[in-house]
Length: 196
Image (cartoon, rainbow, N blue to C red; front, side, top):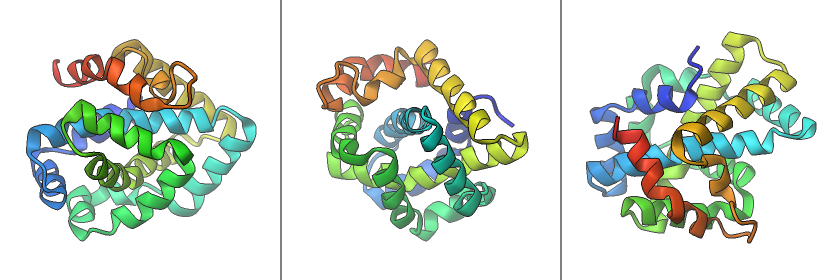
């Protein structure tokens, strides 16, 4: 099990997988890499926020138990090539981001150079992989709902410490619009991920 699910997932997206993503989205590899580097931790942070309440944690555990055992990670390239991830991902994003989905996609797009529509498609393709990584970690560690919430809380703290406040990207200033929050720290976030 990786204690850094974002790092594990980003590490699984090698040049071949990024090329497949870029080909489907019509984007260049640099922009795709930047967008992936922002989107994966952001999705984990949003899941952590949702799991902060006992009801949210139970709902997430139920979804992982039913639909996300981690098998999607057995062949990431094939999953990306099949085109099936986007449909599942759209439903996941509706639950995870709710009415902030458009603002988050726009912010990632501005930070990476992609259009908001393209960033939204990318988020939908990545969401099942993030859920798969989370489901795999949950199974390997035998986490119950409380353990899952605690682990995701740790992921959010880790993102905050290493990436300049990632958890706050979802709405740092409380105005209901995540776009400005993403833009304020987008450069720092991306530099932290790919400037190692």
